[in-house]
Image 1: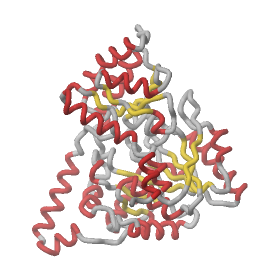
Image 2 (image 1 turned 180 degrees about the vertical axis):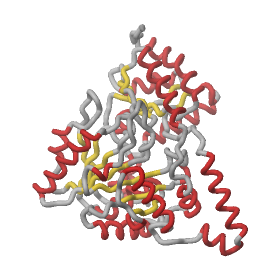
Image 3 (image 1 turned 120 degrees about the vertical axis):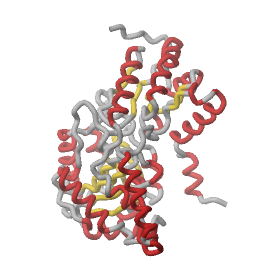
Image 4 (image 1 turned 45 degrees about the horizontal axis):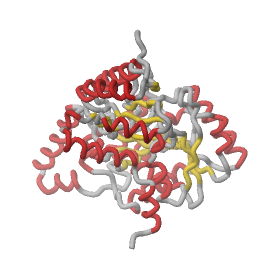
Length: 406
């Protein structure tokens, strides 16, 4: 018989993945070109050519060195990852963001999700609370449940989808162990700019003093490099000393299935040495052991590479402009590759089901802790976006939306 905890997980199973599966089934029935699947944040852009060259070069070098080379490329290493890889990442961050990292401040992880889980295992006790800013990536709930901790939702300001700071402050208690920030945000595409981050940091500093506790700010950063309209990449350790960064190369290098990322812990964070040691142990005891060896070495050679952001920007403009002209109300994304759309029906279920009639696959906002909206992942082909607009037009006509004429 399966565990009670996994039975509870069934109830919270990913709505995003469920819609993705439904989209695949619909594609098999009607043909992939006739289905407009905006469910999953699965990058359509290829990895930069430098990634392939790095992998091929590493494999060739290993083959030339025989058994010794194969061992060096595919064998175990420290639970934190290769020292040279961690040092390269630290130096790259120092150059880009003015940080003061060395190899010991970096722990290589199985993606950002693996990073968050080893952070949680290191800092959380049963009954601890983790605050998230709605709307948020729904898997945070399951990650916290893995360690018998509780997710606490802080409400957004619905005018700009930045956090409602008054509500946020009211949600912090003596049991608050961590706060998660995800910027650029999944699902809204909103960026938490420096002014917002300074205010969040100020509230956390005040609450730490009030409760005599350490509260960690976990910065979940898979979309850090995906910014538009002149917005700048940011690194949040400069705002609050108790910041821990969880990063993934899944989006910046279009490598989601390779599961490679890192956690960065600044030396000024509370109990930094113990944190880092705990992350290393958690990597092992959660069964990751270490991040994939080949991919560690490959990404270390590609730290200045980026995916084709212009590709996503074209999709962003096409989808946002197309839907707003049809009368839909959308938050204009500043980063990431998601469009957050207010449903024009009584409930999101009705809207999502109406979209399916026209082969449009959308994810309900309730999956992100914010009902009344849907998320569209526009990391798809240009053709999918273009071809979806007539389907959205039919949907708008069915719902009697008024077009915004220019």
